[in-house]
Length: 277
Ligand code: FAD
Image 1 (tube, rainbow, N blue to C red):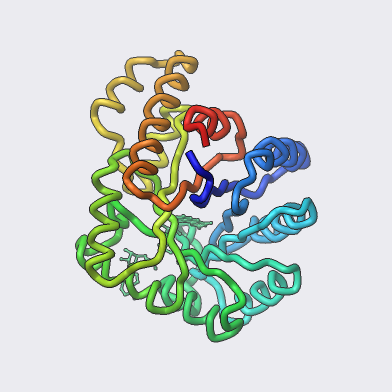
Image 2 (cartoon, helix red, strand yellow):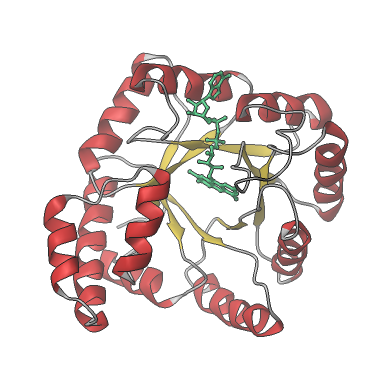
């Protein structure tokens, strides 16, 4: 398989000095796969935000392309402007622009309501400096009023100036291909890169999926449940299923893959090896 497709890895900012050290080691391993960029998530409304900036600084200092996620909910124009310019000064060229979700019970929504407003703001403040990624939802965003409206709202982000999109993770390839087709019919031509969630632990996957609206198909859920605490079987099944998912996506024309690594190198590396990228 040629490497003309775009591959990337996502991390969350570690909370402890041990987590920082571990992530440095994880990055070293994943850097050998020569991804297009490493991205780092950004918690809406608060305490973890400095750690995103710090992790981005480290990735950049190691000589890799770093892409901070930037979520706007609960924030002000002034805060976002300050972050944008500090990233620009660091030489960052790519941003993943999101609305984010406020932790429950936390503060006001702030000065931005939706991600399309953030994309417009980034373009107004920094012109074409940043390559802007936005989120896409092949199984639709949990708050969307209808699939159609969600697509219209996705298009708003592209019209506001986004260059490409990364999807929420999913296990139904039909949902992805249909989403790409429908987007195309609406005149959206930017690359829509599938987000890939390796399967490591069923309870964690079920929790994430319930929260973000990803369907775990019944045949997968039943099989994973049947393994109980047998984590070796969970992981082996997960690697088979997710490798096949990636194969189908790439063969069907997906422009690349974005791995949600959960700060682990092993599963993404193994899938990569099996794909023969
Ligand atoms: P939006 O595009 O604003 O959409 C949110 C909802 O509002 C949708 O239902 C949409 O249909 C609707 N909507 C959008 N625009 C309008 C409009 N103009 N009028 C009316 N309705 C509208 N979260 C974090 O906190 N930190 C992260 O680092 C992070 N990284 C992510 C990375 C990826 C690749 C993905 C897919 C998600 C990520 N998330 C992250 C989660 C994301 O913040 C949540 O899914 C959030 O609920 C929606 O963000 P969004 O940017 O898609 O929002």
